[in-house]
Length: 219
Image (cartoon, rainbow, N blue to C red):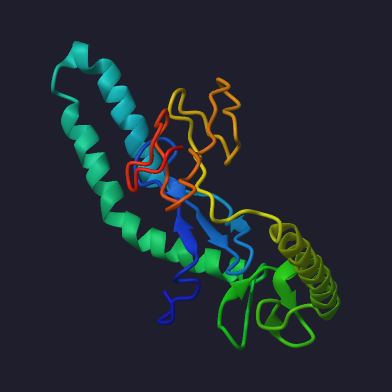
């Protein structure tokens, strides 16, 4: 295997060591868009043979007892002895094939697919964004910023007539419905308006009070 390991941070090992589906396969992903490409599946014959033997031994277990277990264990051991070497060789072949599908950015060193690659600059589109796409995105941002500014100005004009000093109940105390500061509850119709203040000291008057509890002024 090569001393330098490529794609060390953006691949997924999909290899299976044991069973009839034993084999080698690796999934590589684009560093920018995360699209994936899988290497061709390479069967691990020793692992498959061990799987077939294990399956046959299990089927015959009730007939021959433990006599065949040693054959299955030996097959598993033989497969394990060769798995690491063959897996490394398969990984090297997968990397060689993956280089045909990915490009390495000279600036960020990430591996990207063809759709995320600028061949003229030798850079990925994250480091060298498409000019036309950036211009269109900038125009849209400018439009959105201006609309937001106009909307903010309109909100300020509407807010000039809003009484921000009056406390408002945001949740109805009777049915717990969200009221959004309304005078009456939209869920049960309960009146949510705050009690009026004392004409003399401006303290809030409790519901049903005939005199101000703070200064004694008649309501």
